[in-house]
Amino acid sequence: MSDRVIIFDTTLRDGEQCPGASLNPQQKLEVARQLDRLKVDVIEAGFAVSSPGDFEGVNRIAREIKGRVIASLARSVPKDIEAASKALKPAKRRRIHTFVATSEIHMKYKLRKAEEEIVRLAVAAVKLARKYTDDVEFSAEDAARSRPEFLYRVYEAVIAAGATTVNVPDTVGWAVPTQFGQLIRGIRENVPNIRKAVISVHCHNDLGLSTANSLAAVLNGARQVECTINGLGERAGNASLEEVVMGLKVRKDLFKVQTGVDTTEIYKSSRLVSKLTGFLVQPNKAVVGSNAFAHESGIHQHGVLMHRKTYEIMHPKEIGWGESKLVLGKHSGRHAFVERLKGLGFRLNDQQMEEAFERFKVLADRKKEVFDDDLSALVEDQISEAVKRFSLVYLHVTSGTGVVPTATVRLKNPEGKTLQGAASGDGPVDACYNVIDRLVGFKGKLTDYIIQSVTSGKDALGEVTVKLSSNGRVEHGRAASTDIIEASSKAYLNAINRLLFAKR
Ligand code: KIV
Ligand code: ZN
Image (cartoon, helix red, strand yellow):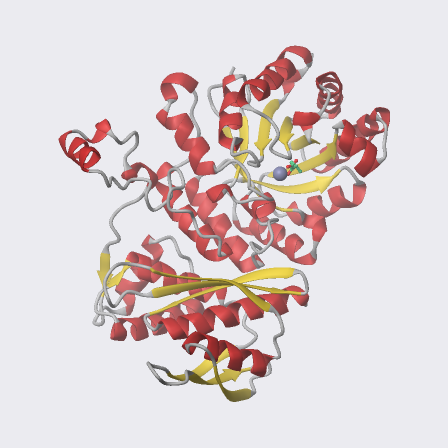
């Protein structure tokens, strides 16, 4: 059996499916570029048939990212498979990923179809997909709760029809490691033509076992793991890429396999996805949480100083986690700025670069030292603002002890018209939000507001993430500034713009 585990990243499909994490096509492309640098094997770029935005996202990634296999999801119906194939057409290497449910509960209540019909649908879907590409993956949705003998039959039939990867999803995060490992072993031992396909797993995290289940599957012969950056995904999320990859690497003695992932790009990938989706990483998250390498207790600190490996099983550098470097200042020129952004992995066109440089100059005026993290925040802001409807032109706030907080705000609307208003509130941020609501005509709800600093120091950039809900839809907005009221207002406007974009 091969000792290479294929890493299939589904951040842009399953990850993006979770409420409030939606990305526009430009943001998807940014994430795909980072996944390219991370060297995952397969990028599942979206579910082409599900919306024009998804179609465009898959298509743009297929056009630009040439070093990875690009995949699109498709139900086992012709219109999905045809949309996937159309969106993937420009890709150098393309995969159609088709699925149908195989558990009794899904077949009976969701699909209202008998086993015979499911096998027929699956085989027809794989055959059709093979007309467009020779790389076809078949997923038996809710496999972990399916009858194993039926699964063997389905997998045998789809492999005979041309599937090159058979995926075993734990769709509802129901499995536990020993049992899931046995299921994979059972598939290896009971599907006669299994050697013609790669066994893949796709584990959800409802019981917090997605990484453990994925690793148990590898021990039992799975050679593809589907995962997402930061474990993003439906409900409690998917297996997190950083945990799976570092698990396989750190415990190579046990797993005896390797991946093609450049682990030094993990930290950057985690930050980018967190910024663009507005889903913050919990501090104690394995591998990429801010406390993952922090040693608080005296005993631990002493141990690490004497010998790092006493309390550290991996080095922060292995995941690309270094000191945020001092890079530029007020007197730095355009050339140094462009080179530094390239070094950070950002690729901007001339106009975007010009805009970023203008922003940098404003920031460098306010802040003596500009760090890598500041630059990333600046450009990520620019990407987030790409969906510009309303933009902030002017802001004046009065606030203090014994003063009624009041804000005057000037905005530009999508037609370029200037709108101005003033309002009070129970604090300066509330006052700004009251004016913005009135000017924009926004009637939704602020459901979350988080503020944190990008780097350390009193002059650090403050980064604000907000979540807004309106008509059952949740969107986030994010912005950074040395002025936290300005960051709060811009983040709020970003979220409103995203809600308007989504509505459109
Ligand atoms: O969780 C799941 O079953 C899925 C499949 C479509 C692979 O996401
Ligand atoms: Zn899933």
